[in-house]
Length: 502
Image 1 (tube, rainbow, N blue to C red):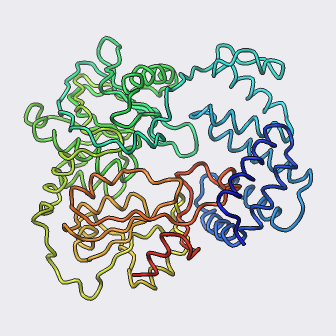
Image 2 (image 1 turned 120 degrees about the vertical axis):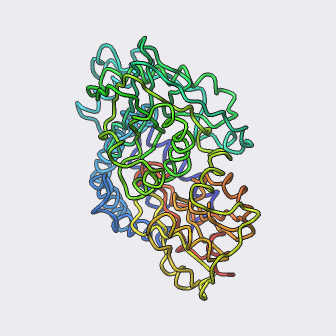
Image 3 (image 1 turned 60 degrees about the horizontal axis):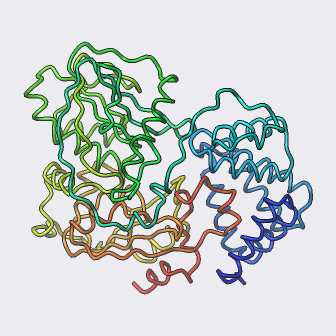
């Protein structure tokens, strides 16, 4: 029998307190109790994690976590499991260390509670110095001098739930900035994922153009600390500049467009592509020999969008993270972080030949399929546990992976879309007004990335929570809430109950 949420939360909090107080064996005993009481959910999560090991970039860490969980399910923890936990937490600390030192410090201090080693001692000493904590860890090791800087942010930025709920701001104006002898570069995550972590534009005087720069963490629009994040981002970009690759030099005009995480479908389709497309015609008239540089990668959906714009490969510059151009043309940001602007959405509707929301009607016969499921088979983040069973039971076939117009056509033909939270929801741009969308989320991760799109298309929308991820697994099976699975295996969750009623 699963523990009540209140009981589980209290036991988990005590387990973390014991770990931080140097009692890791007591921690493991508490976590063992939680895992055994919720063993059905635990096994579902472990099976889902094991299914993606071949493509998981942190598979070695995932294997450690699976091994520890299986051990705790069957026997009383010993010093062997304490050692396993310490090694596992240090591995996650290594992943967090380059980008999120505050989380790394938490993980590494908990690892030290399980037993320390020379490398762990050095990491903690360096972190204390980096975060400005004084000489607290100097007795462990002599920190590097000077420490890598890390400005302290004033709030949780994109993790702030209060800011997520703020109404969308007015659309920002979209201007073209022509910078002679300008540079643009992206800073990559230094972890295994390597996505664009920062975007910098620098003018001919070697000064950052602050209104064209962004760096994670970046706040939601309306955050009361908004003005603070700009200077903080510049500090982090300035610190990263020394490690840049040599610039690609182009002695001609270049239209350069980069977004945070621009390699991901959501950011490409709803932010980068419309930002590029809205200025392309004007820029081409002013600079007929214009070249194009972007950080969206070279996936098929990127190529489809560029070809539809009329940008062939002869105009595209080779992929690079650092560019210098004799004339650098950069459009301003066309939307606020995480909330695509209405102007972007309107442009995309025209670009993909989609009717306005109020004019949208079903243009083809549904052929008996009135439901569609945005499948996430093989997804490394937010795998949907039990989705094949529910898809079959509800006669909601998975959307066929194909070109953007073909995917949009599938959306236009159905009455109900079942959408586990993820990038495929960008295809709701084609949904006719009044159609129903059931968005499935993990309770710990449900950002409002698609709310503006859903409102614009006048869709009937429900956001339903799947099962909660077992708390011990939250600590050491996943990099963070963004990766927690959407668990439909427990019929008692709000999401599963709603699906059963369809």
